[in-house]
Image (cartoon, rainbow, N blue to C red; front, side, top):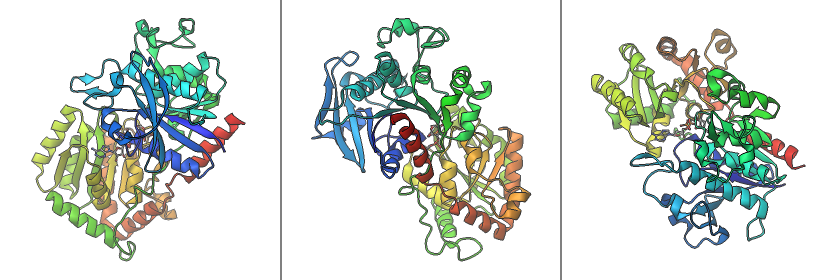
Length: 473
Ligand code: ADP
Ligand code: GLC
């Protein structure tokens, strides 16, 4: 029964660019069920400040890295939110990390400010008397929070969760004073990182405990292929690193596939949703309809899709893609759709409601990631009986049971995993998908297995609670 200050750069339903927001938004409810009261501190971006009208001010400072800052408190969708208002840092037109000209050049200051406010609140408490027993920082944006606390001599326990080690919050060493970091800590075992500074490294060397979002990724992070320069830091702290799998917010991600989904060989609700989706997109697909809902980046292996699609489509498959990101990948996908009218539909953009229709109507969801700390879309697929075809890395490997002969005989298969992440292995998996789909009884069995998988937050929230309890005691 303690209090936790969660510090993060995004949170559903206020602002989301990826899975981080889903997780930060789900944790308070999941942990409340374990007896922990969590408040979420997030920047007051222009896009979210309208929500804070009339909210009381619970903390303020005249100088938050170049201007005044204050924290307004209120409740959004059952979450106790603390919005950090600092117009000189956050009142801008554009996304949380970038504007029309690319990444904001002062991102290190913007998120150091978030971390500073988090550390200050952790030490001073809020003016309503609330004071956390523990600070939980998420990713590089909150990485300096444990560091500020540690360097101020605070003994407040801290947890740092790595959602993606690819983003490290790098700054040149010339920023040391501007970022309010102690110069005597600039050495290799502390703040120094390849001659500069990294907010993620700062958090990794100072947090009481480190978690990441799947057990497999926790193991991968200590290896050069996945650690992205931080593998040595992770390995040095191996005793304090654990992997806790993300859950699914089942209040948001629940299949509504109509009545009696198990009534026929192919669940009826799925057939209806599939037909509606095909009509919406002008698709006519005899074989499995595969969907993709993703940021279009190198991490996600999206470049492999055009390489494997022609064969998959020739064998009867179809493809519906929703995503945005890398302009080169967007162009490749548009080109693919143009080459396969009626079989491939591509929508470039970000659209939560459409994504739900894709999960509901698709037969399979493709996640060919090169690395994946946890991944949520394969789990959303499982919830909707949309069988995942995933690279066997990180959280993807931890959540999908591949349809090998043993798993099929035991009646536990939920999808397909492949390794390594290349066009050959991915192509073979899609061929296998075509074969599985041809056996509709087997397919329906796999759908049932997938939909039965327990993916809510209960077990993982209990693990966070145990971690917190160990630190606060
Ligand atoms: P990551 O955080 O690395 O992008 P995750 O799988 O953890 O990967 O989370 C991605 C989240 O963002 C999921 O909730 C997914 O449904 C959502 N998402 C990604 N791209 C889009 C899009 N174009 N439109 C709607 N939702 C999207
Ligand atoms: C990151 C990872 C993703 C994970 C999400 C939430 O964005 O890329 O794999 O699911 O964080 O933890």
